[in-house]
Structures are given as C-alpha cells and as structure tokens.
Image 1 (tube, one colour):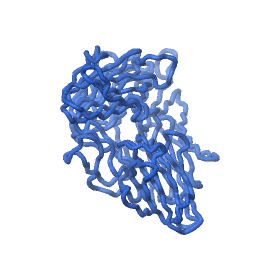
Image 2: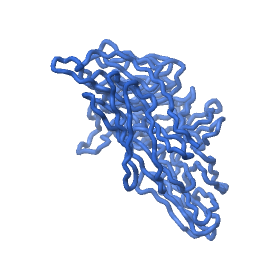
Image 3: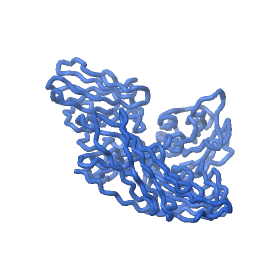
Image 4: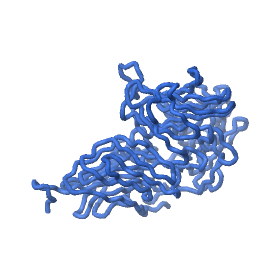
Length: 539
C-alpha cells in the first residue's frame, strides 16, 4: 500500500531584501543562460528592477547567486560537485516576485555571442566544442560561427530557444562552406528548434549560420529578432547524447544503460543508473555537452528488434524505432475476453518526431482496431477490450513512413484500471492584505477513477497554512488549495504531492506548466503585508 506521508524538502534562500514599499521585480531574460560546472559567471538580467539589490532563489540550494552593484547584474557560482541539469531561478523583493526562469549548468565552455557576426566572412571563431549563448537582437539579424573539421568528422549543432527558454522564435540552422555554399539545413527537428548533424566531406573551416522567423507568423517577410530572441547553441564534433535505448528504464533497475547519439565511444556510450521511483530521470556524462531524459516504467521494459516478434506481458513498455508501413514493429499479446488494456504510444511528448499508428490484428490477420493520434504532432492513446480469448498482433509504424534517429517512440501497455492525471497551470501564490489566495489544481479522471485525492504541501515556509476542497466535474476534478498567511509568513518555495489513500498508486509530484519549457515541481508563495498611508506596516 502507498502511504500518504509528507516528503521533506529543505531549501536555502539568499536573503537580501530591502525595505517595504518596493515594486515587484520582473525577469524577462537571462544572458548567458548557463554556466560551466566549477566556474563562476556574471549574468545580465533583463526586466524591471525599481529597487536593487533584490533576493534570488535557486532550485539547487548550493548554487550561489549574488547581486552585483550594477542593477540587473548577478554573479552565479556553481561548485564542482553539481551535476549537469536545468535549474530554476527566481527573483523576489518585498512586493512580489518574478517568473521562475530556466538556467543550465553543464560540462563544456560557455561562450557569449559577439557582434558583428552576421556574415560568413565575419563569423565568430570557435576552436573547440562550446555552447554559445546569445540573442538575435534585431530584425534581420543573422549569427554566424566558424568551426574547423577534419574529413569525415561529424558536427552536431543543436539549438535551444523556443523550447525550454520560451524564446518567441522559429529558428533555422545552416552549414555553409567557407566559400558560401549551403551544405546542410535544418528547421524544426525539435518542434521549432533546429538540430543539424553534418559529416564533413573534406578538411576545412565550416560556418554554422543561425537566423529565425517569429514563432507566431506575421506579415513580415524578413528574418526576425529582438531582445527576447535568446538562444543556446551547442556546437561540437565530440560526443553528443540523444536518447537512452531502451527509452524507458524499469523503476527497480540499477546498472548500465546504453546511449544513442553521435560521436559516442566506449568511454561515453553507457551511463550507470540507480533504482528510482521518479517518473523521469536526468542522465548525464562528463564528456557530454547536454543531458537527456530517461522514462521510468512500472513493468517490464523491452527493446524491440524488428527481426523478432515480442510476446508481451502486461504491464510492458517497449522502445521502438520507426519502420516503413511494409515492415512495422510487430509484437504479440494474449488478450483475455472482456479484460481491457490501456495503450499509449509516446513520441512527441518526449521530444521526438514519430507519429505513431497502432494496428491490432486477430489470429487470422484481420484488423480489429486502429489507433491514431487526434492531430499532427501528438501522441497516440486508447483503450482496448476484445471479445475473444486469443493472441493478437500489434503493429506500430510512423504515419509518414519516416526514418531517422528521432523517429522513435515508446509503447506502454497496462491493465485498464482507474487512473488520473494532475497538474497546475500556475506555479505561484501571492497573498496580500492578510487575505487568502486559492491555487487551482486540475485532475483528469480516467477509466472510472472516483477516489478522493489528498494533496500535501511539503517544504511550505513557516507561517503559511493550506486547506483543500474538491469539486467534482463531469470529466475530472478541481481541487482548490486555499493558502493563508500568519504574521510571521514571508516567502519561499515548496512542492505539492498527490496521494490516494488505501491505493497501490504511488504518490505523485504535482508539476506546474511553464509554456514550452519543462514542467517544474517548485511552487512559490509570498505574503505582502498591509502598508498604511505613511508607508509603514499596519499593526
């Protein structure tokens, strides 16, 4: 049985708050958006700071963030003991707080883009694998970087902008020869962010060229740019990880996991993982410039081999390559009359490109069901209950018959049981004038789920209280969390955990949605005291 015990979270806050009566701060951009582990970097923040210095919170409490004398400038110091990951940074003062912004700590050098680099002849020179942090600062802006390659070397140029950083840009990457010929181009490998893999036909200096269009199309017909067009561009001819394969790792598994990517060798093509109850784990290696995500599965995890047929058990998670319609991934499952299963084929939600189609055939080869996504760039979901006891054949293939390293998916098959999904569209609570504030948590019920859900706020700062109330809806449940503040309450970060009493379901961490960025588990709460007409705190 799962227990509804409250997890403990300890967070450290850097407190540099000035007097009351300040304006709330806003942070719209962070440049550079990352730092190499074991180093310190000065970072420029764009936004609104009517009073300086302000305070900062980081999701990793051992990261040191110190405001500098210049308004909007901070120093970020990352100890060598930190592992690569995306962090969250938030600024706050006595009147409010900023949105949480992503910030990366990694293994390779971070270089800031320098102008003028808009032409191939004036490209910014790189001599080793690097992450360039920059912005397309104005309309028509183009950024170019040169990189030396030997014949046969593989270069990976991977952009992070619209995804994670939420930059409003639809970017294009090109590989250009030193004499100006376009040798390769990529537009939307990772949703609106490009990733280009290029094998050098000969020794020479090659140009990586970046430009963008607005993510929301408008009437302009030129390249776009402004202060919000921030990006991180990884350029390397060294190891670059793409995905663990199998993509899903059993929760109880401890041991080596095989990695797919480019320029990987026996020194960096596997990583060791420990058993984990997390839904996802971040994988990293000292030789990689990036991190990748592993999904944790409750049941068995299989690596599909298209040359053999897999006899499935329930629950199972199968990692699949795309295949042509003439040779789909094929598996077999013995179905029991009247007993249902839940089927999920996930690709786009994991950052990959496959559009999965699932065909189910009976023992005579007749198609009894076809599962398709509801729209383009979506995963495929469904339930299946059949009327006879027999072995059924499951065929999975890509809708467009595409094949590439990113045309992969995982197929999850579980018993059809009551279940639910839970999340929040907001990650913050502001309590003013001693009033209460409500945070809404949305629950989607599946397969007849009807059990009451309890939510615990772990790490809630001293002085705050939380009460919950549930409202049933036709297709789900709304849970209102009412937060109130006592006289000693100030501010801090906490997490929310959902639990179903008396159930075998594991406790679930509630995630806050954050645009195109990764969902984040940290909620922020702050109490603003009442101020009288003279600018002092009301007693």
